[in-house]
Amino acid sequence: MAKSGKDKFRIKSERLPEFISKLEDLTKISDSIKIKIESDNTMMYSILGKATVLAFKNYNIPTSELFEVKDDLEYGIDIIILNAKKFVKNLNFLKENEKVTIEITHKESQEDDTIMDARALQIVGGKLKVNWIGGEHYEIKDMNKKKLDQGLNIKNSRWSFNIDKSDFADIKKLSSINGDRILQIGVNAGKVVISETAAWEMEIDTIDAERSANLILNKKFLGCINDSDSIQFHIFDNFMLVKHEDSNLMLSFEQNWDEEDE
Image (cartoon, rainbow, N blue to C red; front, top):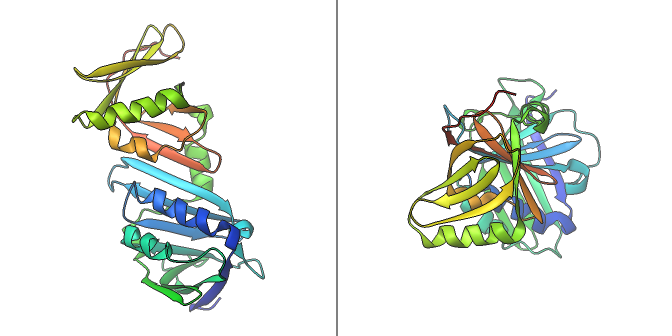
């Protein structure tokens, strides 16, 4: 394997708006994003917190659906994008009806000889060229799809509850009115209530009557949750997980619960 080199892919025009939209969504978690391109899958993610992960979100897209790749990649390519909000703003000037390519200059990872670390990117569409320097591998914790699938397996969750689309829209509006930064998620005799102290509360679900819990969630992460007809929150020991068709959103919470052991 070459110690360094370049790879150039065409971004499929019909997926360009979605690609940019997903990157923009990840900037709600952090201003740094990691993209892992492998032969079968491309994963994009962002993390808030270093010693302790406070929030994490990722998207998975089959590589063949996102890029036009002539041959199977013999290695993975890791791209770290710093100042991602500015990067996305630049990409928004690309036009969907133009041929858009991404050229990645990379070198072999010091940690894994099956991975190439991106040193620079050049994205070209029509008259526009967007050039970006790749961040260092240590600037974002490395995650991979296999470990995530294991660690975020909903079969390992303790319990779950649902919020329908209409209630969730109201919760976001109510949260924007009041100054507190946290939401309380309380479960008493199976009734799930979301509230802000001395402001409002809303009963959103009924679950196992034996369940009691008190969770605290930073409400700024509400904007990171993808809309759907019913949003299901899977509760693990130290975090809650919201899964969507092609994404995972993991949110840490403070907790004080008293429940029956299962």
